[in-house]
Image 1 (cartoon, rainbow, N blue to C red):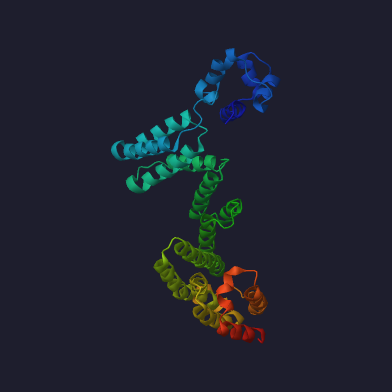
Image 2: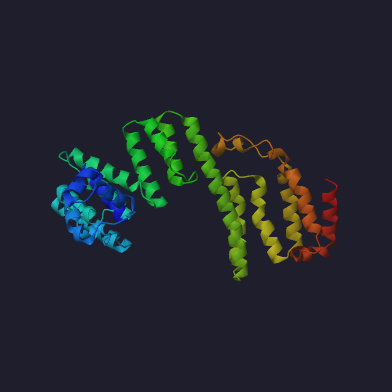
Length: 352
């Protein structure tokens, strides 16, 4: 945070007007206004008085202690936990206030402190825990939610959403969730699902979860194919074969398109330049390719509607497959050219 931002933040927090600051320091109100806009800076001779007026110190005012390293933050958070355990919640909160006053602009510290303090309630909570402490933790989340760091902001927003749901403030929670930009964020999807569940909107909760599951399942399937290629290029042929064997049953367990279950062996046959395995695998793939995939038939995806073009997808892909196999400029399929069985198979494809 820059000095102009610190001046404005501290002045506002203390409920001081620009005129009051100007009067105390012997300057004009327009001068204070320029400081806060970053147009000019306070004279060095009045900085000590300005720091005292704003209830801060010169290091903070000049941003000399703006950030901490991750290691320093982690060490402090461990201190907080120890303080709560050995000296009680009051001591932990006093320690937190002191550190946050010293580093008011360190968003990582703010978020980490809030999470740690809230965790101490679960470990050491008793009936005497004051409501003001719970309010302080939520205030820290609100501060962190204003961070320029997307990760910090989204995590803080997620915690605030959870608190709104605990209070059954569902409309407010939903509004805050919409401010989290990453639509595919697991945190956002998880919170939206919880919100739908709390409101009794089970179909909406199921659709969100099923869509995320399908996305992750497809990603796993794709990553396994990449791992086959990597294992083969590293000379780990047995590993490549084992991974290829995993893809078929896993695709079926995850409710994916039947076509996907053959991709492992298909890719392996190309790497091994095994014409017989290639033809046998492709012969099994084609019926699956031309078969309509009813995704909602799987209990994993009951709430996902079938895409209108899913029935025609296989027919659209078949001409491209034939063209690739006939393309003599592509050396990937050269091992098939001399196989009479392949030529016969290719002719049968064209007649489909």
